[in-house]
Structures are given as C-alpha cells and as structure tokens.
Length: 84
Image 1 (cartoon, helix red, strand yellow):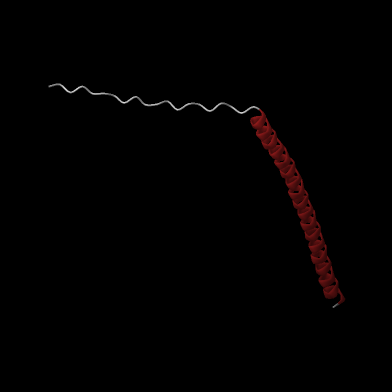
Image 2 (tube, helix red, strand yellow):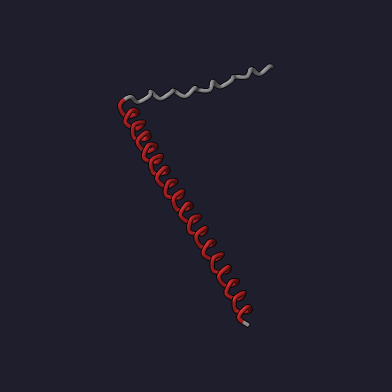
C-alpha cells in the first residue's frame, strides 16, 4: 500500500510541476504581449505627433505663401452653322 501512495504522490508532483511550467510560460507570453502592445502604442503616438506637426507646418506655409488660384478654363460655345 505504501508503494501505491508513492506513485500517487509522484503523479501529483508531476502534475504540479507541469502546472507551474504552464503558468510560467503563460506569464512570460503575457508579459511579451503587453510589452509589444506598449511599444506599439509609443510608436503610434510618436508617428501621430510627427504627422500633426507636419500638417501644422504645411498650414503655416500655405498661409504665408498662398498659391494663386487657377482660373477656370471657359468653354467656348461652339457655334454651328446652319446650312440653308
């Protein structure tokens, strides 16, 4: 009977070790995911700042040097001659 208890204990310890390994792997994967998400948020914020700065610079440049508006080409009415 002592041998039966020994194998049960060994199986229980093996399951416990497996659960600990899986938990450690899950925690590591979660940490990597969170790290990548944070890096993505930082990169997105930097790109947004650069885009907004460029748009503002373009607006200022346009205000200082407005481009002349192009005149619309007027369509000449085609006169048709009527043969009589």
